[in-house]
Image (cartoon, rainbow, N blue to C red; front, side, top):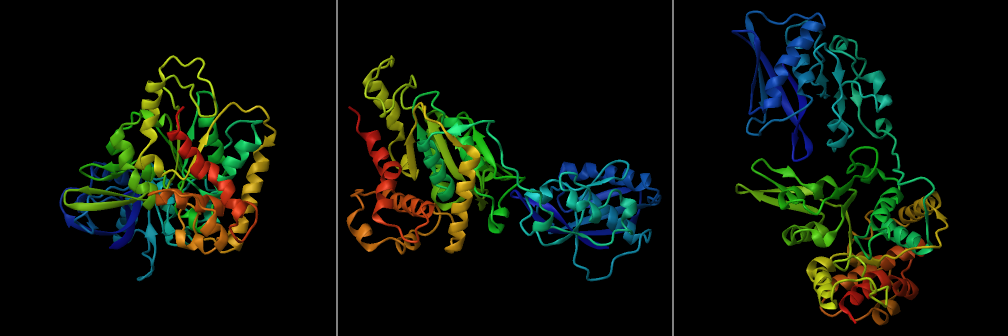
Length: 469
């Protein structure tokens, strides 16, 4: 008997063939095809579940389960149901399905035979239109009519579960805090970062709301499109906050048996790097590739493994060892360090890594905070609809720069762009942010006024970092 199920590979579910046969020998289940310890232990759960539901387990035979492709190390949370179903079909205790029926079986078993849908079925499976027999998942009530409560219902299931938009859980926005309001400058910054999904560096004194702004941005992202839904795990975009002590391998992934790192865990959402200047230099340098390409390549044992890493990177940092310095301040009262020490600290931001941020904002204490968070979320949603209407398929942070240049007025492109020296990234950042501002103002074309407004966060603030008094 052969059935189809899934195994975990590089943070995704990969189809696997489960082939089952019975041989003379001591009763038990033997897995072939490089099973991990979790799969070996599952044989006891499968046996207990089968007997608890009133089915017969072989007394003079052993169950051989071959997993193909055989050369891959196997780890899976849902093969238990596949093996149980294959055994009951093979022994005729339940009528087998029609030959050629294209369906997958993926579920966890309890000792008494209850069937549960593994959560990775909804977070790691890319093709959501497969026909899948699985178990109960209380967080997704739409699944209940077509899923199994226990394995004695195998012959009663009217049809397999069909994963798709109709059975995905509803997206729920996170709520940073109740009654939260923003100033106009904060709202404009969040709107630009959310609409364009631009990488953002927040720099300024302690207590000026840098971390809060990152959480607000996460809560203000527009509701996912059908295409974006493929990259989202759970009920909203992922938000991964990495501590500055995070080691290199944990950030980018790797290991003898390669695993995905923090940057890949944030794929489709936000990777928040708090206290940016406290991260090790090797960790920040390793992030330069996914900053621009949206993928993380890890070479291990003669092979290159590629993980998705198209995350919006948001970072927060102080510019002074005591945390009080900011270009927004003309005086340095209260700073107990020398100007030379402060310069040395903030110079860590210079160079190729900082240049990869598309936006930089200096934070300060805000007083005139009147804009409701819900109002800002609604405005961002309206801009997102405008982008869809004009045929936007990728975010402004990721779309080809040549596509953006086609929408820029020729006079503005040839006469209003600043001299950015050898850094094409700054020029591209200005154009990308200007395209976002044009979207916010519902303009099909990027005009001079949009470029002028984009200059502050995409160019001028980066120059101010270099201009210490």
